[in-house]
Length: 301
Image 1 (cartoon, one colour):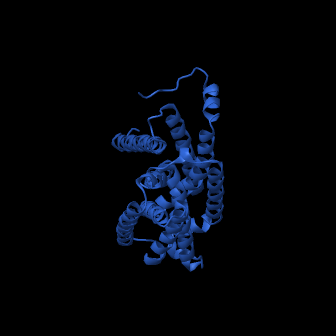
Image 2: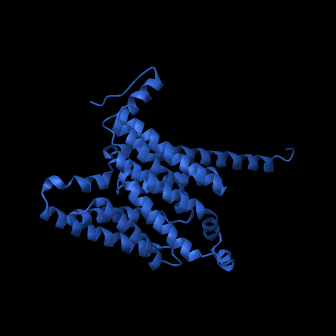
Image 3: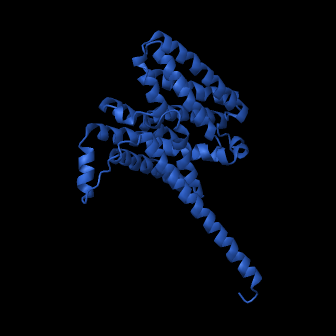
């Protein structure tokens, strides 16, 4: 039966939760994952490359299986194939932007390779070694140790610094590509670099939510931010805060409700926030349009 942690003292509850090393490591690594994921999410939605993240998530699973099949560290295969996949999508796409046909073909190819490597892995290894593939599929943030948490923070910091450094020209190239090219902004190079960062971010975020659910963390925060503001830098901040907040609340829920996997809890929080923002923004738009109609119909007003 699911046990819910209830206490009259929230400070004591948080202290008790953080007294467990696995929870501390989860929050440390999770923050290192969520910050760049939120920033990437804003640009992914703005550039309409949402399914690129989904395709790279499935590529992460294929890369992990390939590494396991040859006896290597699954993280090596995971990051190698997501970065290479991001570059490949850029090369095959138009001006470093993958279109639907390219993404669909890449998606199918990755799934086919995944089946191949899964067959090789299951026939050459004992069934007890299959936990690595399951962790990549569904996430394993509660299973990270201190060194892995530190690596997550380091990778996340690198992605964040690189993305913030290129944020201004990338925004310009995204909003008005033709003018950006006329002003000699390296639009194609920015596109390739962005896809590499998406690949790194996808590989990193797979540890938290898994390859199957990665799309939620790479799309929802940016979608929420763009519904709340039209100011790019405010949107970047909001997207980052939504990603971090969803992860923190999701981890807390999974601690309080042990039967809830952290990947589910994190995405449940993010998706619920998106639904609330969507309904609220639509309601406000309907009310505003009705107010304008009333003013037009009432000559006295």
